[in-house]
Length: 300
Picture 1 (spheres, one colour):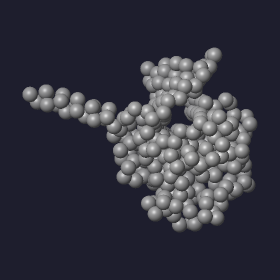
Picture 2 (cartoon, helix red, strand yellow):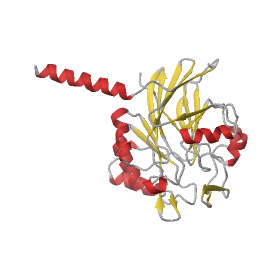
Picture 3 (cartoon, helix red, strand yellow):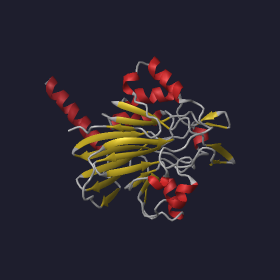
Picture 4 (cartoon, one colour):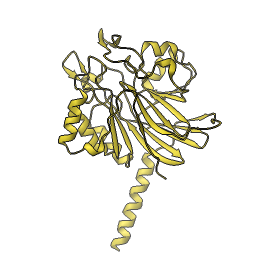
């Protein structure tokens, strides 16, 4: 009888979990490549900008290609100076299948990208950012609310992008900033792989739901930097928050991004490295310099 009760509990739990993962709101079919690349990798370009490749699919996140000395506008008259150069020039990018945009801020979608990015490239972003992007002339924008998903197919490869909870700072500050989302990328094809991109969020109560709904995360890309507005309010994860997120999400591997690139980033990568060492989590983290690539092997 005890075994039957345990089995029933497991079945009920699995059914509840399946109900939480809803059918995708959107579907996108991309033309299959004649000879799809087999590479599966993450290349760090700078700030929150990375290229994610998976068996012929190429995703560009939070495109920011300004140069050292350029300034971005953060709203309310606030600006920040870029301290680094991107590892790749915008014009040198490979063909991109879609853009993943955590939120509409100039250091994630800069003025040059707004002018030069192909108006027909699919962009996955927050519901609030989607309308503004359409006003700029972008034609294929998929606005997702929390837990909504887009299903992408390209040849034998598929990808499900699901919007994760995100809050850009403490509650009062977040109300004055653009809404932000994290994203779960579930790749399938010749193997499976799950990547969590945190977006510019802090660790708050809603984040607790992510590992319950999406356990078994293979790789997490953590937006750090400890971005501080007016020198007072921190609106992205600093070293301490980054370690909290690392423990909570519990990925097999984590890569920090979004650090050291702008003057508003007040928590340097070295602080996170030290905090990771002190937490005994050094074996879980890989560090990429601008331009470097992390290659992964999908689970068979």
